[in-house]
Length: 84
Image 1 (cartoon, rainbow, N blue to C red):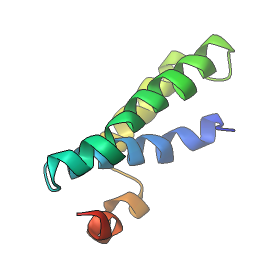
Image 2: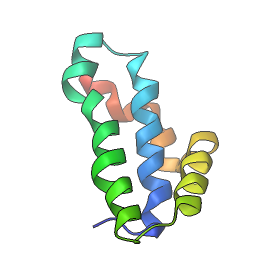
Image 3: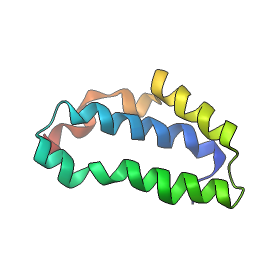
Image 4: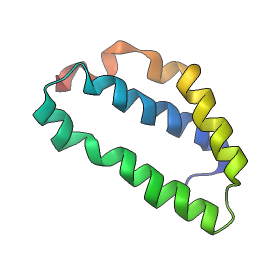
């Protein structure tokens, strides 16, 4: 269950995955992480908007905030190092 309060943290993770794409082996990224952005957009955000759990403006604001100022947990470089 993802609530509106979770969107910032979720999008911080979302953007971190894309940062890792440039740092890790392409095959590993494709196998382990590529699908995550699609799942977040399709299974969490689209469903949440459809079911009126989130408003589009709320989603857009959280996505942009996370892109420019990620949650502190997702700022740490060491999180994905074991997978590189």
